[in-house]
Length: 213
Image (cartoon, rainbow, N blue to C red; front, side, top):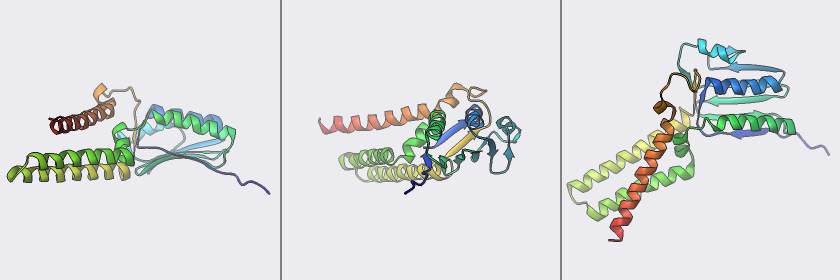
């Protein structure tokens, strides 16, 4: 009996990858693999520095592929994953290095909306808070306004989640992470997470305060 080789596969949440992250991924494959190529939806290059010649600030598709061992890192509009064709100590080490780099690229807000548990918590918080306010306080015109607000909020939530999970899963910025962009641009995901958390916390606090008074 011979055990068949098993591949190593890792799936990642939505990512925002900068050029220096691409270079680090490329260096890992360059060191471990016999040959490495980089492919976008329109071009193929042998050096990540050449990506700067693409006439755009960002792209949605990037594939890094190495041979011997066969490694593929796929950053696509609808998913992000890494694949190695055979499990071994060496290949698990390569995958660990890839994961370590991509961890810092996770899009914090997008991860909330593409993770089923986080998404349901946000959905239920909006639904329960608005429904409670309608039952507790509203009548007539105010009730209709709150119902419209609930529909709008839930519609925005579905639209945002759909866009993040299918069309904007991977964003590759063709410049270094600490380049010309401002502090707010680099940290906007963390800021948005804080805002969302604050809104949910405030809504629950209001509900609990009213409920027990």
